[in-house]
Amino acid sequence: MAAEKKKVGAPDSVALLLFFVFWYAGNMKYNEYNTGALTAAGGKNAGYTMTISTLQLGVCAVYALLLWIIRLNPISLFGLQMPGAQPVPGITTSDLIKTIPVGFCSAAAHSSSVFALGGDPLFGQIVKAGEPVMAALVGYTVYGKAESFAKYMCLPIIVGGVAFASLKKNAEGAYGLKFDQTALVFGMLANGFAAIKGQENAKIMKGPDGKPSETYMRYGGVGNQFAVTEILAFLVSLPVMFYTEGDKFASFVELLKTNQALQFNLVMSGLSFYLYNELATMTIKKTSAVTSSVANTAKRVIVMVYMAAVTGKVLTDEQKIGAAVAICGVLLYSLIDDLLKGGKSKTK
Image (cartoon, rainbow, N blue to C red):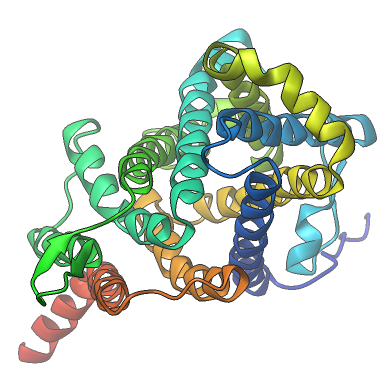
């Protein structure tokens, strides 16, 4: 009788915790490198934002192809587990078609985020903290997945926090709206596409019975699914890039040839984006799309503090209060059902 093959590395519970930690750390570094790339290219008014967004996805696509060449994915090392095999997936045309919505939403969410964070890195994070609101709205209106009444009552708190962060006192002491419109509009778009992506991603991973779907089984794991998603996202973004900024592409290439800061930050932002998103995708395998949105929002607190330190930009009092209210609303949103259940069990 053959000896049982022992699993090498940390337990899955420990690995999952570490995946969350490195997901957060990776996002922090991505925001730093993304800001560095945009700044090196001339800032938000230089007209290269879509180009940078697309080329970041290009880095992701190249990395994905390299994983298939070496047939190994080192991502599990972040969870203190041995690297897993990653052969080219044996997916069907039908599987690829099912993945296109995820790839499209991934491209749209990424580009929208780059525009939002390019407009204002800190306020953009505050707007994106409202992602659970969009996740709940999309889940109900598009996918017919209703949350509890108590959860819905938490949503105005999140919205109110983001709204208050948009206020600023004038010389007379009266409040008025003052915010970066690019960060607000594209931040909201990013939230919407991220919410749809989360739902579509979950549909690929699990069938109606809650078990791994046939499509997911043919992918052979999260790594392959995410690799295909990022390649599709890059292919989707290319025509948009050439349509919107194609007339400036030659000048961008010349700038890229001579600007080492742009070269470094562009490559590192693309690589860190792939790694932290793959870690996020791995957590979705064991958690719901809304739970992922909540974790993503909690992460933004750390990212905001980190980016404030990196950019030297200080949050206004209104932004601090608004961000705190929004984050507390998200925390309450994630815990309210369990808190109410606990209260009911004690009264019995």
